[in-house]
Length: 595
Image (cartoon, rainbow, N blue to C red; front, side):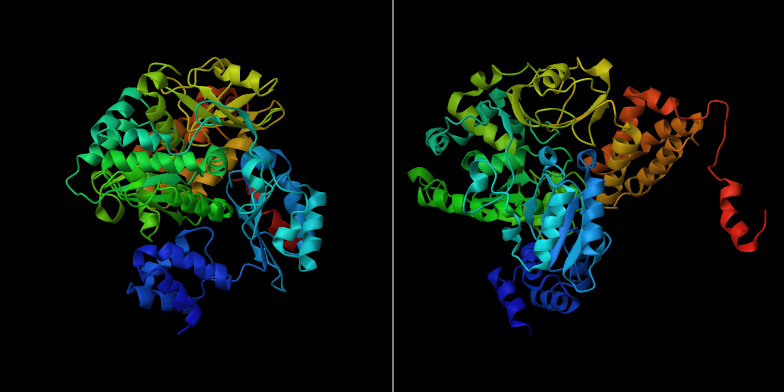
């Protein structure tokens, strides 16, 4: 028995529900999770090797083999490609001496692609052994590889200094910048930690829920479910053991607001979790933190310790007898689908992040089978302000259907990318002017799962009654090839990130991607467009939001930017399989010297 692995397992009390933590610590220690370690873990936790393999193989950042002393994960999002990712990747390969997906022969450097790492406002960006490197250039890449060959520590490779705000904290020391461009109630600096807790303990939990209902605040993760109603459902559950989950797994390409809140307003977030716990009667909370933000974990743990020392977490919070609540951090390991609340719960239980069938809903049967409220980072922060100033005050912002403010993550072809906290109800045109975007061809609202609109849609309003969004706006300039540079990239993303559980999600995005390539290459016909529009209904039988929206990149551009497709298809051809006899026999002709 390996004593190192045994110590890791014992650190989590040999609890199979902490499998994710055990695998992460094992990989951090050994550089991978080899078969011998996997077998030891499975035996110690009394789970089958198959169950462990299912979890191990599901997540992007787990590996059974060494990925290099310096493991480079280079973001391949659409915005990264806009800002020179292709050339950065080429120089990485040239300098390292291996291709992406490979490790150098001496085991020094491993190069790997990865989906959006939450740095769309400072691309191209990469994770190297968990450390974030932003604004990469070919020159910077050459410097990095030289440093690796000299054996420098990853932290020594930063050189350019640390980012703004808490990014320069001794517990973070990151080159990331916040780029907070506009502040509102959530990001304002007039917040005093603990004030909301001191206020709610004078109220009955039902009164807290009623105030949240009165604010009409809806979930800020994208689905927009009324927060007060969700809490009420959970409080009414018969099972008295309840959980509060914060979903900090923001994997939607183009979104980075949670990263900024976690860096600059963590106390606000944790107080929001405490407010939710008081309202629903929960004693346990979990912050599910995406692996890409692992660099923030020590900092966040320190904030939790500070709040415990001030009696804002723990036993009898704020001297309120019976108000017991504490929070632990659960890391993910790279899976976009875990942003869906039931998949997130499955992952926190040490399983594959596959969405559950519903009902029952998490508020009835969630983490470990107990009632669980899952709220987004921004939602929980907003709730604190609701409790401090009242639901009526909160409703004074925004529109009737979309109350309050929204944190928007703006990236792409604009002068001022970053985070803007604005009231719901602004038009897209208002925001384009604010961020210095000129002669815009299109805007992707809500990330790949959202909607792509053209200039005739720029007067549309951001809000649940028109353009709902989890927070991402990607601006696309006139010089971009929308179908090739944006839509195809998004389809690749959905194909890569599907859990593969539902047949439509497993097969149709691949088929639609082939149609898209066919159209881009000038071989498409009208029937291809008709097929795409007809097949979209099949996706509704998928069990989760990812499956429902996986065709949106094509469907929304086909609806709002249809001319891009019509300009490319063959107008006088009814049927084209894409097969070209000349191309198919070209190699054979060369080999046989036939013409």
